[in-house]
Image (cartoon, rainbow, N blue to C red; front, side, top):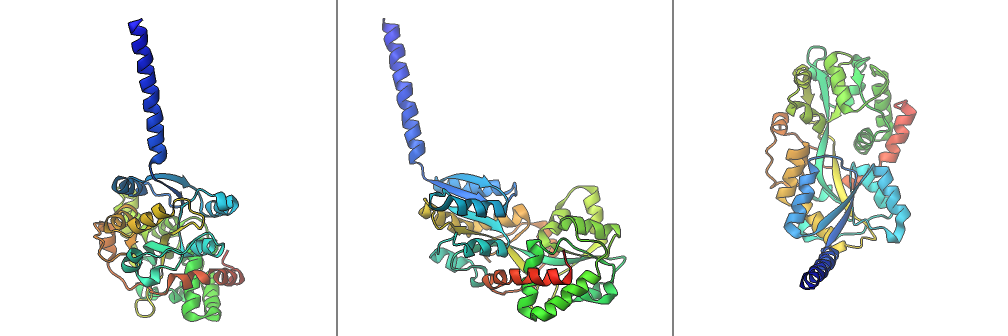
Amino acid sequence: MVIRMLRVRHLLALAAALVAGHAAAQAQPVLNIYSARHYQTDEALYANFTKQTGIRINRLDGKEEELVERIRNEGASSPADVLITVDAARLEIADKMGLFQPVSSKVLESRVPAHLRTPNWVAFSTRARVIAYNKAAVNGDWVQSYEDLANPRLKGQICVRSGSHPYNLSLGAAMIAHNGEAKTEEWAKGVVANFARTPKGGDTDQLKAVAAGECGVAVSNSYYVARLLRSTKPEDQEVMKKLAIVWPNQKTWGTHVNVSGAGVVKTAPNREAAIKFMEYLASDEAQAYFADGNNEWPVVKTAKVKNPALDTLGDFKADTMPIGQLAATTVQAQKVYDRAGWR
Protein backbone atom coordinates (compact mmCIF):
# COMPACT_ATOMS: atom_id res chain seq x y z
CA MET A 1 0.00 0.00 0.00
CA VAL A 2 2.83 2.35 0.95
CA ILE A 3 4.63 1.58 -2.32
CA ARG A 4 1.45 2.22 -4.30
CA MET A 5 0.92 5.59 -2.53
CA LEU A 6 4.51 6.60 -3.25
CA ARG A 7 4.08 5.65 -6.89
CA VAL A 8 0.89 7.72 -7.12
CA ARG A 9 2.61 10.69 -5.50
CA HIS A 10 5.50 10.32 -7.95
CA LEU A 11 3.14 10.30 -10.91
CA LEU A 12 1.28 13.35 -9.58
CA ALA A 13 4.57 15.18 -9.05
CA LEU A 14 5.70 14.28 -12.57
CA ALA A 15 2.42 15.49 -14.02
CA ALA A 16 2.69 18.73 -12.07
CA ALA A 17 6.25 19.22 -13.33
CA LEU A 18 5.16 18.66 -16.92
CA VAL A 19 2.32 21.16 -16.54
CA ALA A 20 4.70 23.67 -14.95
CA GLY A 21 7.23 23.11 -17.71
CA HIS A 22 4.58 23.62 -20.38
CA ALA A 23 3.38 26.78 -18.67
CA ALA A 24 6.96 28.06 -18.47
CA ALA A 25 7.48 27.32 -22.16
CA GLN A 26 4.25 29.12 -22.94
CA ALA A 27 5.35 32.10 -20.83
CA GLN A 28 8.79 32.32 -22.48
CA PRO A 29 8.87 35.23 -24.93
CA VAL A 30 9.04 34.16 -28.55
CA LEU A 31 9.87 35.67 -31.91
CA ASN A 32 8.59 34.31 -35.21
CA ILE A 33 10.98 34.95 -38.10
CA TYR A 34 10.26 34.30 -41.77
CA SER A 35 13.68 34.13 -43.41
CA ALA A 36 14.83 33.93 -47.01
CA ARG A 37 18.49 33.91 -45.94
CA HIS A 38 19.69 30.33 -46.35
CA TYR A 39 23.16 30.54 -44.86
CA GLN A 40 24.23 27.94 -42.32
CA THR A 41 26.38 30.47 -40.52
CA ASP A 42 23.24 32.44 -39.55
CA GLU A 43 22.41 29.72 -36.99
CA ALA A 44 24.96 31.24 -34.61
CA LEU A 45 23.34 34.64 -35.15
CA TYR A 46 19.95 33.40 -33.95
CA ALA A 47 21.33 31.28 -31.12
CA ASN A 48 23.26 34.23 -29.74
CA PHE A 49 20.14 36.42 -29.72
CA THR A 50 18.27 33.84 -27.66
CA LYS A 51 21.23 33.49 -25.32
CA GLN A 52 21.36 37.26 -24.76
CA THR A 53 17.65 37.93 -24.43
CA GLY A 54 15.94 34.67 -23.46
CA ILE A 55 13.62 35.14 -26.45
CA ARG A 56 13.02 31.86 -28.24
CA ILE A 57 13.10 32.02 -32.04
CA ASN A 58 10.70 30.12 -34.26
CA ARG A 59 12.00 30.32 -37.81
CA LEU A 60 10.32 29.53 -41.09
CA ASP A 61 12.75 29.34 -44.03
CA GLY A 62 11.63 29.68 -47.62
CA LYS A 63 12.05 31.50 -50.92
CA GLU A 64 11.45 35.24 -50.93
CA GLU A 65 8.34 35.21 -53.10
CA GLU A 66 6.81 32.32 -51.15
CA LEU A 67 7.29 34.00 -47.78
CA VAL A 68 5.90 37.33 -48.97
CA GLU A 69 2.87 35.60 -50.46
CA ARG A 70 2.37 33.58 -47.28
CA ILE A 71 2.36 36.66 -45.06
CA ARG A 72 -0.11 38.35 -47.38
CA ASN A 73 -2.40 35.32 -47.40
CA GLU A 74 -2.22 34.91 -43.63
CA GLY A 75 -3.40 38.47 -43.19
CA ALA A 76 -4.10 39.73 -39.68
CA SER A 77 -3.66 36.23 -38.24
CA SER A 78 -0.08 35.85 -39.50
CA PRO A 79 2.32 34.70 -36.78
CA ALA A 80 5.23 36.40 -38.57
CA ASP A 81 7.04 39.08 -36.57
CA VAL A 82 10.05 39.74 -38.82
CA LEU A 83 10.72 39.13 -42.51
CA ILE A 84 14.39 38.78 -43.46
CA THR A 85 15.45 38.64 -47.09
CA VAL A 86 18.18 39.62 -49.51
CA ASP A 87 18.02 42.36 -52.13
CA ALA A 88 16.53 45.82 -51.78
CA ALA A 89 14.02 45.15 -54.56
CA ARG A 90 12.47 42.24 -52.66
CA LEU A 91 12.26 44.25 -49.45
CA GLU A 92 10.64 47.12 -51.30
CA ILE A 93 8.10 44.79 -52.93
CA ALA A 94 7.08 43.52 -49.49
CA ASP A 95 6.83 47.09 -48.24
CA LYS A 96 4.71 48.21 -51.20
CA MET A 97 2.33 45.33 -50.39
CA GLY A 98 1.86 46.86 -46.95
CA LEU A 99 3.55 44.01 -45.10
CA PHE A 100 5.85 46.16 -42.94
CA GLN A 101 5.18 48.68 -40.19
CA PRO A 102 7.24 51.76 -39.32
CA VAL A 103 9.89 51.17 -36.66
CA SER A 104 11.12 54.03 -34.54
CA SER A 105 14.41 53.11 -32.89
CA LYS A 106 17.21 55.37 -31.74
CA VAL A 107 19.55 52.37 -31.82
CA LEU A 108 18.91 51.73 -35.51
CA GLU A 109 19.02 55.42 -36.37
CA SER A 110 22.36 55.88 -34.65
CA ARG A 111 24.05 52.72 -35.94
CA VAL A 112 22.74 52.13 -39.48
CA PRO A 113 23.66 54.81 -42.05
CA ALA A 114 20.67 56.77 -43.32
CA HIS A 115 21.11 55.64 -46.94
CA LEU A 116 20.85 51.98 -45.84
CA ARG A 117 17.46 52.20 -44.16
CA THR A 118 13.93 53.29 -44.95
CA PRO A 119 11.12 54.12 -42.51
CA ASN A 120 9.84 50.52 -42.77
CA TRP A 121 12.87 48.28 -43.36
CA VAL A 122 16.57 48.28 -42.59
CA ALA A 123 19.68 46.86 -44.27
CA PHE A 124 22.04 44.93 -42.03
CA SER A 125 24.74 43.84 -44.48
CA THR A 126 25.96 44.78 -47.94
CA ARG A 127 27.42 42.93 -50.90
CA ALA A 128 29.03 44.57 -53.93
CA ARG A 129 28.52 43.81 -57.63
CA VAL A 130 32.08 43.40 -58.92
CA ILE A 131 33.63 42.73 -62.32
CA ALA A 132 35.90 39.68 -62.70
CA TYR A 133 38.12 39.13 -65.73
CA ASN A 134 40.54 36.51 -67.02
CA LYS A 135 44.01 37.98 -66.53
CA ALA A 136 45.43 36.09 -69.51
CA ALA A 137 42.69 37.09 -71.95
CA VAL A 138 41.44 40.59 -71.10
CA ASN A 139 43.15 43.92 -70.52
CA GLY A 140 42.07 45.11 -67.05
CA ASP A 141 41.94 48.71 -68.26
CA TRP A 142 39.00 47.73 -70.45
CA VAL A 143 36.71 46.81 -67.54
CA GLN A 144 36.99 49.58 -64.98
CA SER A 145 33.30 50.51 -65.00
CA TYR A 146 29.92 48.92 -65.61
CA GLU A 147 29.61 51.15 -68.67
CA ASP A 148 32.74 49.49 -70.11
CA LEU A 149 30.86 46.19 -70.39
CA ALA A 150 28.96 47.56 -73.40
CA ASN A 151 32.11 48.44 -75.35
CA PRO A 152 32.25 46.48 -78.66
CA ARG A 153 35.85 45.43 -77.97
CA LEU A 154 34.39 42.96 -75.44
CA LYS A 155 32.25 41.24 -78.08
CA GLY A 156 31.84 37.55 -77.24
CA GLN A 157 33.54 38.03 -73.87
CA ILE A 158 30.79 38.48 -71.27
CA CYS A 159 29.20 35.80 -69.08
CA VAL A 160 26.38 36.88 -66.80
CA ARG A 161 23.30 35.44 -65.13
CA SER A 162 19.71 36.18 -66.16
CA GLY A 163 18.57 39.75 -66.54
CA SER A 164 15.48 38.93 -64.48
CA HIS A 165 17.53 38.01 -61.43
CA PRO A 166 17.22 40.63 -58.65
CA TYR A 167 21.00 41.10 -58.44
CA ASN A 168 21.11 42.31 -62.03
CA LEU A 169 17.83 44.19 -61.76
CA SER A 170 19.22 46.19 -58.86
CA LEU A 171 22.33 46.98 -60.88
CA GLY A 172 20.09 48.13 -63.73
CA ALA A 173 18.13 50.27 -61.29
CA ALA A 174 21.35 51.92 -60.14
CA MET A 175 22.35 52.57 -63.75
CA ILE A 176 18.98 54.19 -64.43
CA ALA A 177 19.28 56.38 -61.34
CA HIS A 178 22.75 57.57 -62.30
CA ASN A 179 22.66 57.61 -66.11
CA GLY A 180 18.97 57.79 -67.04
CA GLU A 181 16.71 55.22 -68.70
CA ALA A 182 17.71 55.91 -72.31
CA LYS A 183 21.45 55.54 -71.68
CA THR A 184 20.84 52.45 -69.54
CA GLU A 185 18.89 50.80 -72.33
CA GLU A 186 21.65 51.61 -74.80
CA TRP A 187 24.13 50.11 -72.31
CA ALA A 188 22.04 46.96 -71.81
CA LYS A 189 21.86 46.42 -75.58
CA GLY A 190 25.64 46.74 -75.76
CA VAL A 191 26.09 44.19 -72.96
CA VAL A 192 23.74 41.74 -74.71
CA ALA A 193 25.71 42.18 -77.95
CA ASN A 194 28.85 41.18 -76.03
CA PHE A 195 27.44 37.96 -74.52
CA ALA A 196 29.68 34.92 -74.89
CA ARG A 197 26.67 32.67 -74.25
CA THR A 198 23.02 32.81 -73.28
CA PRO A 199 22.72 33.82 -69.60
CA LYS A 200 22.54 30.79 -67.30
CA GLY A 201 23.54 29.67 -63.83
CA GLY A 202 24.53 31.66 -60.77
CA ASP A 203 27.41 34.01 -60.09
CA THR A 204 29.84 31.21 -59.18
CA ASP A 205 29.13 29.61 -62.56
CA GLN A 206 30.08 32.86 -64.29
CA LEU A 207 33.36 33.10 -62.37
CA LYS A 208 34.29 29.52 -63.23
CA ALA A 209 33.42 30.11 -66.89
CA VAL A 210 35.79 33.08 -67.01
CA ALA A 211 38.57 31.04 -65.42
CA ALA A 212 37.95 28.22 -67.91
CA GLY A 213 38.22 30.60 -70.87
CA GLU A 214 34.60 30.21 -71.94
CA CYS A 215 34.38 33.99 -71.64
CA GLY A 216 36.67 36.78 -70.54
CA VAL A 217 34.54 38.89 -68.19
CA ALA A 218 31.78 38.31 -65.65
CA VAL A 219 29.75 40.28 -63.14
CA SER A 220 29.35 38.75 -59.69
CA ASN A 221 28.30 39.54 -56.16
CA SER A 222 31.38 39.94 -54.02
CA TYR A 223 30.55 37.23 -51.50
CA TYR A 224 30.74 34.56 -54.21
CA VAL A 225 34.27 35.73 -54.93
CA ALA A 226 35.08 35.67 -51.22
CA ARG A 227 33.78 32.10 -50.92
CA LEU A 228 36.17 30.95 -53.62
CA LEU A 229 39.01 32.87 -51.98
CA ARG A 230 38.33 31.08 -48.67
CA SER A 231 37.82 27.66 -50.23
CA THR A 232 40.35 24.91 -49.50
CA LYS A 233 39.41 23.02 -52.67
CA PRO A 234 42.29 23.00 -55.18
CA GLU A 235 39.92 23.57 -58.11
CA ASP A 236 38.51 26.73 -56.48
CA GLN A 237 42.00 28.00 -55.74
CA GLU A 238 42.91 27.46 -59.40
CA VAL A 239 39.88 29.51 -60.46
CA MET A 240 40.97 32.46 -58.35
CA LYS A 241 44.54 32.31 -59.65
CA LYS A 242 43.21 33.06 -63.13
CA LEU A 243 40.90 35.91 -62.14
CA ALA A 244 41.37 39.57 -61.31
CA ILE A 245 38.65 41.52 -59.51
CA VAL A 246 37.67 45.11 -60.29
CA TRP A 247 35.73 47.54 -58.10
CA PRO A 248 33.74 49.26 -60.86
CA ASN A 249 33.13 53.00 -61.18
CA GLN A 250 35.67 54.15 -58.62
CA LYS A 251 36.17 57.36 -60.60
CA THR A 252 32.43 58.12 -60.79
CA TRP A 253 29.54 57.09 -58.53
CA GLY A 254 31.15 54.10 -56.88
CA THR A 255 30.58 50.35 -56.94
CA HIS A 256 26.96 49.23 -56.79
CA VAL A 257 26.01 47.53 -53.52
CA ASN A 258 22.97 45.56 -52.51
CA VAL A 259 21.81 44.40 -49.12
CA SER A 260 20.37 41.86 -46.78
CA GLY A 261 17.70 43.43 -44.65
CA ALA A 262 14.63 43.00 -42.51
CA GLY A 263 11.37 44.62 -41.51
CA VAL A 264 8.85 44.19 -38.71
CA VAL A 265 5.65 42.68 -40.09
CA LYS A 266 2.63 44.97 -39.81
CA THR A 267 0.60 42.43 -37.82
CA ALA A 268 3.52 41.20 -35.67
CA PRO A 269 2.11 39.55 -32.51
CA ASN A 270 5.46 40.05 -30.74
CA ARG A 271 6.33 43.58 -31.80
CA GLU A 272 8.57 44.40 -28.84
CA ALA A 273 10.66 41.26 -29.38
CA ALA A 274 10.80 42.03 -33.11
CA ILE A 275 12.24 45.50 -32.55
CA LYS A 276 14.70 44.08 -30.03
CA PHE A 277 15.84 41.60 -32.69
CA MET A 278 16.25 44.35 -35.29
CA GLU A 279 18.38 46.31 -32.84
CA TYR A 280 20.40 43.19 -32.07
CA LEU A 281 21.19 42.78 -35.80
CA ALA A 282 22.79 46.23 -35.65
CA SER A 283 25.05 45.27 -32.74
CA ASP A 284 28.79 44.89 -33.34
CA GLU A 285 28.59 41.21 -32.42
CA ALA A 286 25.78 40.40 -34.86
CA GLN A 287 27.41 42.47 -37.58
CA ALA A 288 30.55 40.36 -37.25
CA TYR A 289 28.47 37.24 -38.02
CA PHE A 290 27.42 38.75 -41.35
CA ALA A 291 31.00 39.56 -42.26
CA ASP A 292 32.86 36.53 -40.98
CA GLY A 293 30.11 34.00 -41.61
CA ASN A 294 28.85 34.93 -45.06
CA ASN A 295 31.51 37.27 -46.44
CA GLU A 296 29.26 40.34 -46.42
CA TRP A 297 30.22 43.82 -45.28
CA PRO A 298 28.66 45.06 -42.04
CA VAL A 299 26.69 48.28 -42.23
CA VAL A 300 27.89 49.41 -38.79
CA LYS A 301 31.30 51.02 -39.00
CA THR A 302 32.42 49.98 -35.51
CA ALA A 303 31.96 46.25 -36.21
CA LYS A 304 35.27 44.37 -36.25
CA VAL A 305 35.78 42.13 -39.27
CA LYS A 306 38.17 39.17 -39.20
CA ASN A 307 37.68 37.84 -42.70
CA PRO A 308 40.84 37.20 -44.77
CA ALA A 309 38.89 37.14 -48.04
CA LEU A 310 37.39 40.58 -47.42
CA ASP A 311 40.86 41.81 -46.46
CA THR A 312 42.19 40.44 -49.76
CA LEU A 313 39.47 42.20 -51.73
CA GLY A 314 40.39 45.45 -49.99
CA ASP A 315 38.65 48.79 -49.60
CA PHE A 316 36.53 50.46 -52.24
CA LYS A 317 34.25 53.42 -52.82
CA ALA A 318 30.65 52.22 -52.62
CA ASP A 319 27.63 53.86 -54.19
CA THR A 320 25.77 55.73 -51.44
CA MET A 321 22.46 56.08 -53.25
CA PRO A 322 19.57 55.75 -50.75
CA ILE A 323 18.54 52.10 -50.81
CA GLY A 324 14.84 52.97 -51.08
CA GLN A 325 15.51 54.98 -54.23
CA LEU A 326 17.37 52.04 -55.73
CA ALA A 327 14.54 49.62 -54.97
CA ALA A 328 11.96 51.92 -56.53
CA THR A 329 13.38 51.64 -60.07
CA THR A 330 13.82 47.87 -60.39
CA VAL A 331 10.54 47.44 -62.30
CA GLN A 332 11.78 50.04 -64.75
CA ALA A 333 15.07 48.12 -65.03
CA GLN A 334 13.22 44.92 -65.94
CA LYS A 335 11.44 46.70 -68.80
CA VAL A 336 14.78 48.06 -70.04
CA TYR A 337 16.34 44.60 -69.98
CA ASP A 338 13.35 43.08 -71.76
CA ARG A 339 13.63 45.62 -74.57
CA ALA A 340 17.38 44.99 -74.79
CA GLY A 341 16.90 41.22 -75.02
CA TRP A 342 18.64 40.45 -71.71
CA ARG A 343 16.59 37.40 -70.72
